[in-house]
Length: 118
Image 1 (cartoon, rainbow, N blue to C red):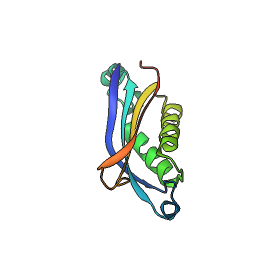
Image 2 (cartoon, one colour):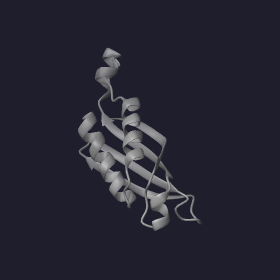
Image 3 (cartoon, one colour):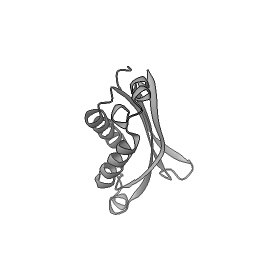
Image 4 (tube, rainbow, N blue to C red):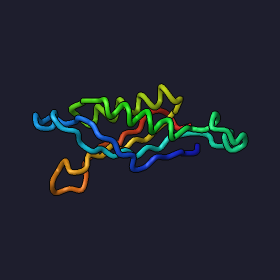
């Protein structure tokens, strides 16, 4: 199994359980690892045979920007489902961080893995 990755993808969303959070947009940071077999893309040198990290990034930014979940767990789960469904990824690891959510911490968040490695 090979892995295509995206790190530090910055998005903004309405997210949180507190009333004040429901009226602002907060920064989120995503890291993704996506299972693939890079040999086909390497052989053809064609984006059609590759995991298109630019398309995935753009789709996630649009989805997250339009979302209004309370929990980062919910957003992480829905984002993982979207990537797997729309881009045919069989396995992924997604890290979703919410910087500044806890004043004494640099960041808080969740890491989930979905699917079966390749």
